Image 1 (tube, one colour):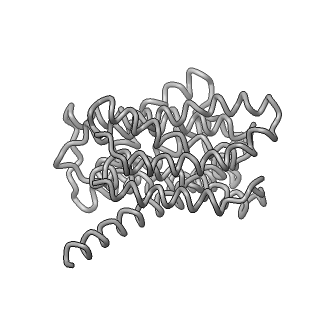
Image 2 (cartoon, rainbow, N blue to C red):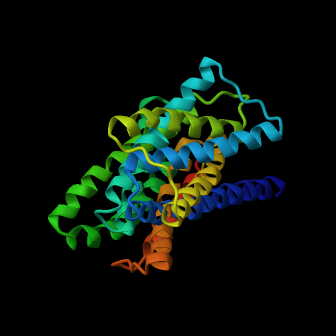
Image 3 (cartoon, rainbow, N blue to C red):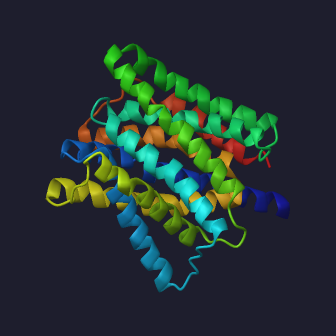
Amino acid sequence: MINIIQNFKKNLLSVSLILLAGVNYGLIFPLNSMAIHAHASYFGHAFWQTIISGLLLLLIVMYIREPFRLTFEYIRVYFLVGVFAFSIPMSVLTLVSSQIPVGMTSLVMGLSPTLTYILGMLVKLERPSLIGILGIMLGFVGLIILLLPELFLPSSEILIWFAIALITPVCLAIANISASFYNPRDSSPISMGAGFLLAGAVSIFPLTFYFNQFYWPIGTNLIIPTFGASMVNIVHIVLFATIVKNYGAVFFSQFNYIVIIFAMLWAFIIFDETPSSSIILPLVLMTLGIVLSSLRK
């Protein structure tokens, strides 16, 4: 009986953390859209939101006297996650946010769990599991229910931008596996999060100048989405490091299903952007898939 209660509490905590991650990160899509409509460049916006959040998190690390290590083992995973979880995806998502609706942009995130699971099995980080596969498939079915109306309604031009956005889930899958595969055992979520964000900022900084996209985020129209995205990143990266370390990369990757739902809800609240299909059934399937996946171990 005690074991059942302990397992229930553990699964409840894992599901709660991943739901919180989805609610939080769903905000990044309308914030990116706000930034691009305020004439921010996609490389520039990706740089500013990562450097600000990274420096703020580093200050917190120093204040609480948490060790921030710079050995090869740490720097390697800093840049793997920083580049593939932040630099490339944020640049791509900001780029396409001016071309396709916020809700549709978020749909690409739903491919990350499947790609992460496949990649995890290829590197032998994950073993095939019937419950794990069923959980992933339920979430994927929920994604398809959301995706089909969006794919049939837009123009062919929008579909081209949607195809570009597909770069994002590939990068996120690589970042998820890297964080789990190379994560040092004595690491802490907050210090690792600071390293991820700063590495992402460092890697994208040269591109802002090479493509002539550097700017200063001044003016209300730019300050709000820039600092808003930075705050989202701080919460996200700490949850990311915590969930991956304790529950695995594949389990964390399913937060992307929740992101889709809440990106649409945030877009409705902020932009009055109404989804073209009901989200109730997909939400049930995605949540059920996450719960099943949390039970696989």
